[in-house]
Structures are given as C-alpha cells and as structure tokens.
Image 1 (cartoon, rainbow, N blue to C red):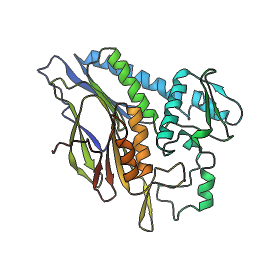
Image 2: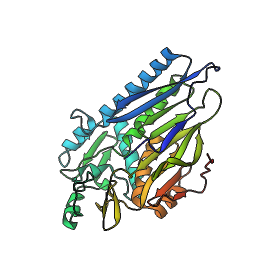
Image 3: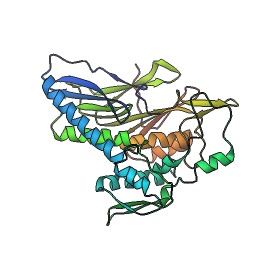
Image 4: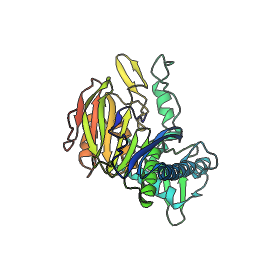
Length: 327
C-alpha cells in the first residue's frame, strides 16, 4: 500500500510577502487521494494549473487502467495467449521500463502479477496460511519474461492465456511524473504532485526554502526520525503497517513476492528517493520483496537513488548518502 502517512509535507503555508504563493488542492483520481501543490501568482492561475495536472492524470488512468474495458491495457489482457495487440508508443515505453526494473530486481517487481489469485486475505478473515499447492497455482501465470514487445509493429503480446498485466506498482508514480512535466512546461516554477504518497517535487518554496518531508516511525506515528529537504526529484513510501496477517508470530505483509507467491516479512515501510516517481514507486515495492540487506545493496548500485527502511522493530536502515536533519 502506497501511503502519504509517512511523508508529511512541512512549511507549505502561503508566504504573503512574496510575489508568488503556495496553492494546493486535494483530488480523488486513479482510485486514490492526490494532492497537487503549485507556486503561482494567484488563485485563478493556480486553479488553471491544477486543472491541467488533473486532466493529465485522468488521461494516464485511461491508458493504463485494467478496470477500464476500453483501455489499451485491458485490450492486451483480453488477447493474452491469442494475438499481439497494437498500442500507443507511450504504453510500449512504460512496459519496456517496467521490464527493465523486473530485470534489475530479479523479478521482485513484475507487472504480470495481476494474474495472481487473491488467496491471501488481509481483512481479518484468514485463519491459516494458504497451502503450497494454492500458492503455486496462484503464480502460474506470472512472469515478465512472457511479455513480448515488438517495437517495429508497436505491439504487446502476453504469451500465456490468462496472463494479465497491471500497473498498480508503477502507475501512480508515472502519472505524477507526467503531471509534473506538463506543469513545468507551462511555466510553473515549483510544486509537488502527491499521488497518495508517490511524491514528485520541483523548485523551492516562495521564501527560498526547500520542500521538506518527515520520515516517521510507523510504530509511533507522532514521532519522526528527522527531516529531509528535497527540491528536485521524487519520494515514495510503501508501507505494510495497516495491511498484514500474523501466523506463528510471523508478520506477513500484503506485498506479495511475485516469484514465490508468499508475502514479504521483516519490513514495515520503505521510502525511496529517486529522480522520478515512476522509478521510486517500483523500487519501493521491490525493496519490500527483496528484504533489507539485498534491497539496500541493490539501491546502493543505482546512481541518484537512496533508500530508508523501517523494520518491524521500528529500527532505521538507510543507504550511505542519506542525510537526515534532526527535528
């Protein structure tokens, strides 16, 4: 579950003495809460900018939604195992980047997870762990290696009948990136696109200070480990502290390893800092699946990417270049 609970925007009240002010609006898009923040000269200008961002996010949703029967994604899924589907170059490129992240994470991230049966329930109704047979059956149609792209023909083909792709682990981040790019192109000097915890920022506040986020402890939500300034880039937090089950004193996250069918364990939240929200979105889920040691090691190898992990004991783990400012 991507959530904004761990990322608290600080110091965003309007600065009346400045030529520009901060304006923000909450929106419900892509099935979750968005908040668009812009620096503008007045309310009419801010409203126009926010409407542009909203329109772009709605456009992205129509492209990648697996719930919309008319979307290109749904068309790909309906033709799984039958024939390639011609789609837009934009969707081709998004799928290509998704496959690259799958390779980077050894399959910890996989957009073909959408075919997995809902055998794990996190609503309190589960009484026992699913059987090995049930779990194996649930992942039979998962495998990013079975997604074929023909760039010349601009087609996508899912090799196995019943396969499905979904962009739940990357879609909101991509939408945040696109909205940011559009607003910057229209001359918005600074702002934040917050897609339910998938945040993309640019510029600084009207008083010249950077935007700041607080890294909070999921076990003690009223306390923070410290503050991190951010002026250009994305911050995404993935957390499991609200959706989980416990069996034999082991806490199982709602974030499932697509390679094994078993939930991740040992981590409460992962926060990723990256150049784009799309990348941060996908990596946050991947680190959950890879675990603390492997996850941090993999992130350390990526230029411009940093990571903070809170384990199930509330202890902090982070990449070497993270500098947290005490509150």
